[in-house]
Length: 111
Image 1 (cartoon, one colour):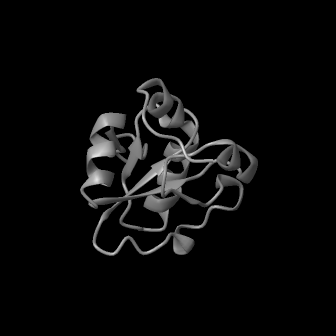
Image 2 (cartoon, rainbow, N blue to C red):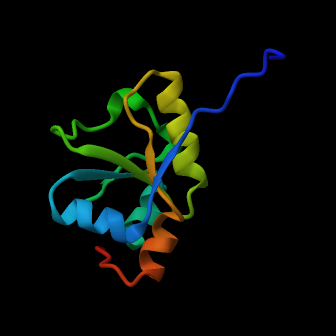
């Protein structure tokens, strides 16, 4: 109405739902934390594409699966989703609460 742009809608998926999607082979996770954070522990099978050099064009091909972004708590993955929206990349989903929510749910961690 006043020319203010609406923020892109981000879809959130919870840790248990993401675990089920990964188990069923229906999702691919991209972790946007920095390499040292990723090395300290990440969701098994996750790909690392740090926000500091995040480019939607460098996202891996999910092979027909849903691509889901993750970070430590949800802020950086939301920022990456904003970049995806600006680039018109077909990615709109991130892990609610990030890796912190994943670990709090007692789900597996890879190091």
